[in-house]
Amino acid sequence: MMSSKSARKSRKKKHSKGPTLAEQADRHVLYELSVQCAEAEIDFVDETFKKLRHRRARLLREDFCGTANVCCDWVQRRKGNRAIGVDIDPEVLEWGRNNNLSKLPEAARKRVQLLQKDVLKVKTEPADVISAMNFSYWLFKDRKDLKRYFSRVRKALADDGVFFLDAYGGYDSFREITEETEVEGENFTYIWEQERYEPISGGLICHIHFAFPDGSRMKKAFSYDWRLWTLPEIRELLEEAGFSRVTVYWQGFDEDGEPDGDFKPAREGEADAGWICYITAEK
Image (tube, rainbow, N blue to C red; front, side, top):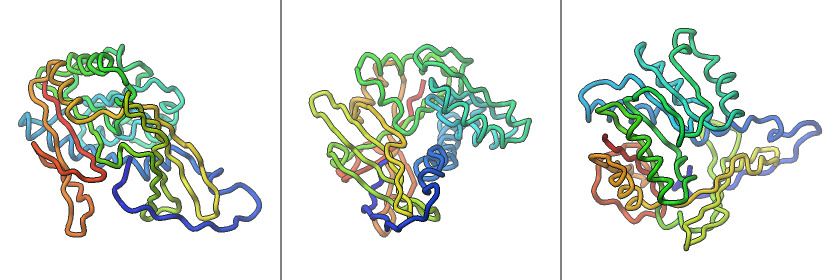
């Protein structure tokens, strides 16, 4: 969600009478275009699982699945792939059914199951992969709650299953800042706001806004009430939950100093202003 690129303010233009671009836009579409790259995420999951287990994963469970974009990408990879999406929000699940699942061929659509359930209570068949991306698990603010979630994930995995998650950090992550990024090839600007960070509890309030060329804005399209978990805390809780091996995958940089999208196992990272990493936890 947080980009390391320099903020670039969108140009404001007067708009004609009638609905503004912000009023016409769909927040879920904007999110998928600016935040979530399901293809790259699944590329990493698919390739990494094969390296770790020397076989292809078949069943993926996506926790906090939202619009189920990842589930849909997964079942289209191979005919034998199945996906279970879990989310507690009925509105976002319905949007996913109407806008993502509906576009799949019937055979692929039958291999996706969406469950409106609490991830702390849901029971599913053992999955090869369980993913919790876009820092969604940060909604668990207490140590005991996050450890409980990790423990339940471990029990829900197949015997050789792997848990995939991500994290972000860097010294900018502890600041109250707003960052604007023009989305390449799209007619809007993505705005990430860290409204409040509280250092004693680690509480973090964030919002996503969108701005458009006609000067209109979609304010607080998405809001998050999180705890900013650090990598040492996450790794320790995964190990305490019983995972046998936890690995951090650090992103490299290209010759221009921009993130290159290539995540490799690492024991040490760099003290960058903002970084994003993947984590695997093996059962």
